[in-house]
Image (cartoon, rainbow over all chains, first blue to last red; front, side):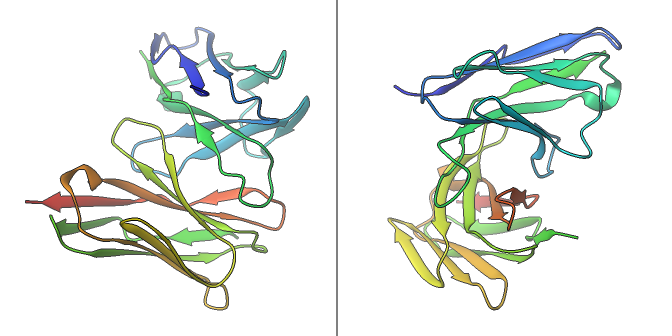
Length: 114
Length: 109
């Protein structure tokens, strides 16, 4: 089945210790997104790629970086995690950004910062 | 600024009908989406509206009025598995998705 896969599902890291979250997709979609979602809040878009074109949201902290080495994979690097970065991180893909192109989400990675 | 408003929480009874409202103020409009999100899981797509009117999909229907900046999601014949959060999201003039915080729906037997 075509899908969006995120690893790991749960990640515990220490304050200030770099961490990388990964996402892969078998949908062959052009667009990949990274969202941060805290409890009972709307998903917050961090950045997205349209093919190799990187789009950073204006309010995404510099602490967050991303890489997309190929169509299938995308990574989220948190360089120095703080306690406020504990959240669910959602990867999503879509075939485009217009029309009825809905986003397909992975299961998420829940990040805990100790 | 851009804003999506939904009730924080609603309660309904198994077998009943519930309507979840969403109002929006965005810079432009290029479609409205409803997603379902069970606790601790990722959102899954439910419906898409770009023209005024009602879209029906089984037990779920979604309505849009662009002139009023308003949509609702109607769930019929509620089942316990419908207990989840329902998120409204609007695609703006830059084709960015603006998300609401979601409505937590609690279904009681």
